[in-house]
Length: 309
Image 1 (cartoon, helix red, strand yellow):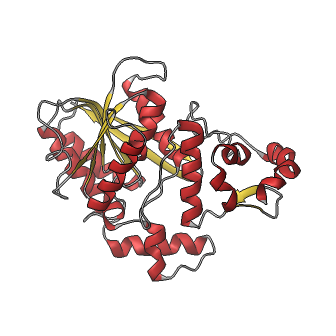
Image 2 (cartoon, helix red, strand yellow):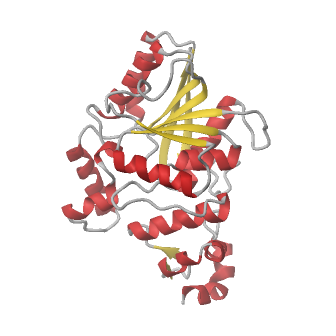
Image 3 (cartoon, one colour):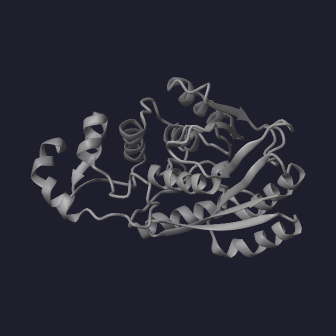
């Protein structure tokens, strides 16, 4: 069994462990994964682990069931989320990266882990995994309104919230109109400290499939077209006509009509080249303040675009 090998490689693993300094200073995942600790807290993870050629305990990050098991273990061990799983074919987000995003949002809105002031966050497109509300509530005590346009993802997200006893803290609502961002899920008199969003990156499903193929080819994996959905996510998670630029432009357009809805409107922006047209749209919207907050997660560089009126 893999667990029996922990004693053999424990010291070597510790020596090789390096702080992931590009993660936020408050991110508890800066030192990587402690698989021994995770297996103690979530024994089901053990069957997904193996010792690689460097005598390091790891798992195959190209196997969806292994990634889901790792996420479940992280949520159970570090955030007291004991019941978490998602349907096959839906995006399984990296917990350290999503936690990092929330730490930067906390800096933006002036929140801390010991802050007793009630904060309310709007999560646009929460996904089947409902990861942002789960982490935001457990780390900072924030309350959430989370929207989702995919009916199956909406039901899965609600079930996770209910199974973990968080219905009073996290409300999941169904967005009936895929062309709307805020309208249809909020009341005009509602206010939030911030909204967060991880928008669809690609302009079409075909573009998303090509991106997935490139990703797995770079990892040395030959993925059949029929398997892409198991790795890549659903259409609504991956693509939007015009990609992230058009999605966020739509978000900016609606925010101008509801300027007092959020103290800060924010969204992730994956591509550096997307910033120029978006900043132009924000200038046309006459925002009071605009910020671009850089984030580094592993080899990936991303940024948060934030504005307020």
